[in-house]
Structures are given as structure tokens and as C-alpha cells.
Image 1: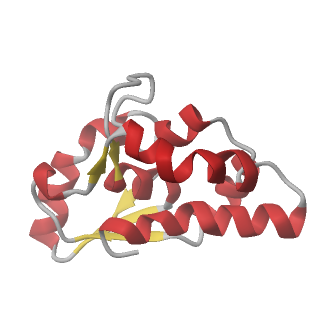
Image 2: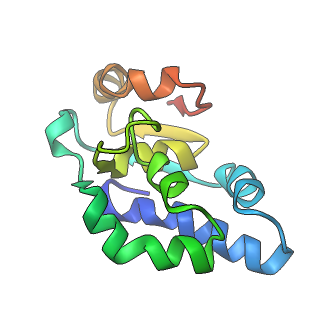
Length: 131
């Protein structure tokens, strides 16, 4: 996945796996994460797409409930630096990191910069590896 909106593939790949195998979202995410790779091109936090909780509610509340069988706040937690901060915006980079087994930069130097930028998220116990 390359930056931005493509991170929504994390959700849809998990949803497809759920439908095909009759498992929970958490199980589906764990399985599909292994086949997901995120390549970041943005080396500044301001470059990541962010959406307000109210905008996410407008477009994803029904999807979370009906397609993912997931509480909306659990969906939002996937896109937050601090999953417990209910006012924090939904960040597409954090969604990608939560749903991918590895994260690439577009160069070695870029990978180092991105690693520092996203370090807080990675400290939260995520297993994403930079290459």
C-alpha cells in the first residue's frame, strides 16, 4: 500500500477474510496483516491524511458495524497514535502500520526519517518492521 487512502485496504482485506472464513475482525486482521506491506512517501507528520472522528462516523460507522462487526471506537483506535484518545483524528499512516507486517520507506534515509516520525506508534507493541 502506498500512502493515504490505500490504507483502507487493511480493513477490506480483513472484511473479505471474515466473510470467507467466518472469523472475527481481530482474527482476520492478524491473518491478513502478514500479506500487507505499507510504503510511506511522507517524511513529515503533516503529510499524512487525517480525518476527524465525526467525518469517520459519517462514512464508516455502518461499515464498522455491518461489515467488520466492530465497535466504531475500535475502528478509530486503529488510526490513532493513542487508541484511547477519543478526540484524536484518524491517521491513515497509523491505520496502515496497524494493518501491515512491514513498512518501507522509499529510500534507506527516508526509512530512517519515517521510523523516527512513527516511533511512537511502533512503541505501542506493533510488529511492523522497516526495511
